[in-house]
Amino acid sequence: MTRDLRMRWLTPALALLIVLSLSACSFAPNTIFGAHSEFGHSVDTLTRRLLYAGLTVFVLIEGLLVYILVKFSDREGNREAKQIHGNTTLEVSWTIVPAVILAFIAVPTIKTIFETQAKAVPSALQVEVIGHQWWWEFRYPQYGVTTANELYLPVGRTANFALTTKDVLHSFWIPQLNGKRDLISNHTNYIWFTPDSAFAWNGFCAEYCGTSHANMRFKVFTVTPAEFDAYIAHQKTLAVGSTPPAAAADTGKKSATPVPQAAPVPVMNVSDTSSATYPRSKLPEWVIPKTPLPVNLTFDQNVTGDAARGAAMFKGAPCIACHTIKGVPTAAGIIGPNLTHVGSRTTIAGGIYPNDLKHLRLWIKNAPEMKAGSLMPLFGKNEKGATPGLYTDQQIADLAAYLSSLK
Ligand code: CUA
Image 1 (cartoon, rainbow, N blue to C red):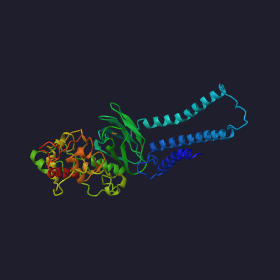
Image 2 (image 1 turned 180 degrees about the vertical axis):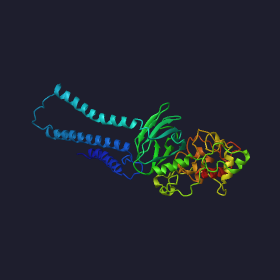
Image 3 (image 1 turned 90 degrees about the vertical axis):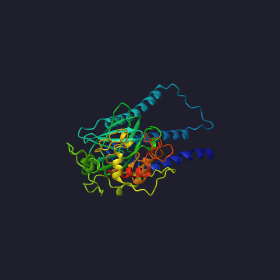
Image 4 (image 1 turned 60 degrees about the vertical axis):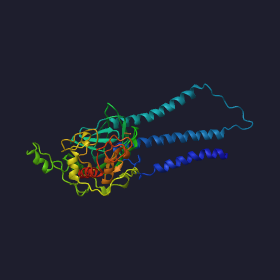
């Protein structure tokens, strides 16, 4: 073997070795090789079966080829090999054998596709997934709950997802729970699976959908049925402080249909069924976003936000044209994420920043700088390109304090 030839084999062999070692890492956070739903297991089984079958065919064919090359290589004094051009038996057999192999692959593949594409049983948890540039809307129609970028699912209960999009194509993908399925305009796609373990997972958009396609992420929390019930019960409530006593005194009359008021959740603890959201202290490190902040963005560190002032301001702010906060009658926009319990979420901006005061303030101040192509405009008064008369850092701090209080 010449040196050149050796090099030619070395590179692909090394690449193969790296791919194989990477795929063996079942602890990799976003691996597709550690299935945690029966959907994942069926795809996994199919992949492995086909891989082993392909490997068997490969070894047989290559073994035969090498054997023939060695055994029948041209040597001095050999007579001319028998010419077999036009041998019908051979031609028919090397047509039929691959056809049989393809049928062997097609039957289980199509069976698996149909299984996972069907609508799930009616008793399943129904989840509507709506893709937006560049965030995820999740609705639980059985409970009247709408949220964004964070999905709670009970372990052991089948979840049936109905996938649609508000704009362009997106693709719903939680690597460790399922395969992926596209969100297509004017069409509802379905996917279902049953999570088999409680944990926190990363979700992604897996179809190029514009500038911030890579910034369209979400989190999935698989929790016990009791924890899920607590989560839903909490999400059904109105926003904290949405009907302050002062406002009630103004109108002088009580609401005709009293709606339960959300209690603040000071201690988040999943083992305690009265808790409503996944405890931040228990979040695995790899679901916490680490997107670097834009270098030019600054915020006055001396201001302290006031939630009550922020709440009063929010009612008449441009925010209400795009965002809903249940319990704030003026806030009924549906273009942006529903903010009723935004304070209880672990991330903002389509899962790319942690949900804390620092990031929330900068996001309100200059969303387009925080996320390329963001449809949310900038609201910082002093920002380059901002319309005059928008918000000072103090006002933004008040708004951020209010939104953070919406646990
Ligand atoms: Cu949505 Cu890519």
